[in-house]
Amino acid sequence: MLQRTQKYWENRPEVYEMPFSEFLREYAELLPIMRDKEGRIGNLDLRDTGYVPMTEEEIALHKKDWKAFSRGRGFSEYDIAEYGRWHKITGQTDNLEYAINDTWRRLLPDWEMMIYLKHIERAKAQGIKLEPRIEQSYVSILKKYNLQTAKKNIKTKSNKVSIIQTMAHNENDDW
Image (cartoon, rainbow, N blue to C red; front, side):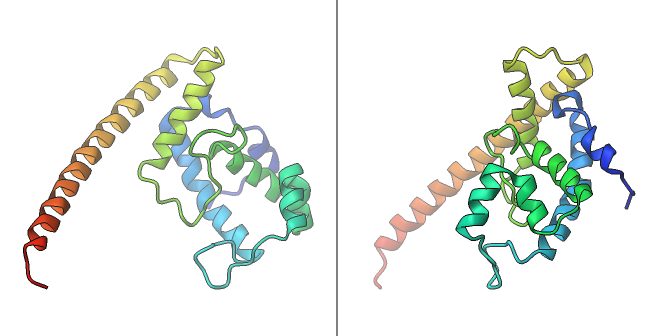
C-alpha cells in the first residue's frame, strides 16, 4: 500500500476534476483503509452481533462536528484527513443522493458510477465548466450506467412475470 501524507489527502482534486478511472482508483484505495480504521474503534456493522451503537451524545457531536467526534474516538489528524477525503468522494460532504458511509454494506449495484455521476451533475448544476476529458468521462459513464440499468430493468421485469406465472400456476395445485 502506498504511504500518503496528510497534505496529500487534504489537497486532492474535486471529484468533478477527475475522470471516472481516477475516481475509481481513489475509491478502491480508501475503502479498505476506512474498513480497517472503523473496525478498530468498535464494530460499526449493523448486521454484526457485536455492533456498538453510538450514544445520543456521540450522534449529536457527529452531526455538529465529525472531526471533533473523530478526535474523541482517538483518531489522529492524519486519520481525519483520510476520512475527510472518504467523506468527500462518497458524496457525504455535499449531501449527494445515494451518499452513504457504509464500508461494509456497499451493495447498491453500480454505486461507484451513481455517485460519480451525482458529483458531476452537481458541478454542472452549479455552472462549473468541466474539462473536455471529464465531460467525455461523464458521458461515457452515463451511457454505461444507463445501459446497465436498462438491462437490469428488463431482467427484473421478466423475473416478475416469471414469479407471477409461477404463483398463478401454484394456485391450481392442491396443497
